[in-house]
Length: 397
Image (cartoon, rainbow, N blue to C red):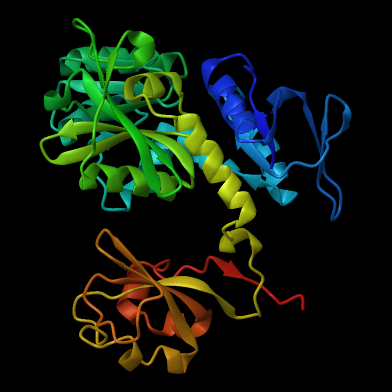
């Protein structure tokens, strides 16, 4: 495998470890400075230059995109995607992870633990917003802060109001988040690779510091996660569109609460805390994907007109509740069930004898019009995107 590691810091721990792990496994790995690319766009021929010369062929790309170059970095990754080069993290996933509000909005429709959060712009809305999430103390966060920078604990409503007003006057967008008291000064970092947590650590703040980031002096220790924390981390990464991610979670009385999903997680802290070869796990995963890549149906699948992939929900009281997939009549409507989502379980290629239950979500391929007809009229009016095609187009064959 020929691997390109996109990084502006070739000598930093994470980049060096990833390159060394690839070389030790017999791969050809090079660190390419992200800002030295040129993006060439032409009809039917997307291409890249590096340091002014045509880029040679690569089998895979591992982006390590810093927050300060998100726009250009994601453009480079997007170009690799158009050139059919496997990218360990997608350009959309990286962009989603960089904006804290966007991340929480994407995660909020799913049944995952999140700290109560609010976002307002008008000064008069600040106090009502704080009251809606339970009052002070609250955490105030800059939308694009990293490594604990731009995270402030406000003990009273008046202090919070003054801080927010100051930040907004400096044209900074901020989130207001409920302070999880029982998790003060500590959090969990789970390192997700593909559909596994390959390592996890607890970060503990020192002294009176409430931020547990390693860059702020936090102490780290290895931790074995239970199924709830592992499943939460994996689902969060997948929902964000990231194959490799560091998922930060608070340990609340109600279970894990997701703080952030990081698309370029550092390796030094977690390898030091766990003693595990996290870099090796990343390289092994990328090599396996190059040998047998997953297909992103949203970008690559071209189907006949009127056909596509959509999700159907089975609400309480639906005529399909209690029926098996075989008895549902979906097959006769030219609709094939690819995956059944039930609670936190994902059942691929479910058997036709499986009985449908309220709350089931079926990922289906078939006639879009037939799938739209399955949604009751009142439901369609209330939520018109309940059946949302992921792909639709005309066959080129």
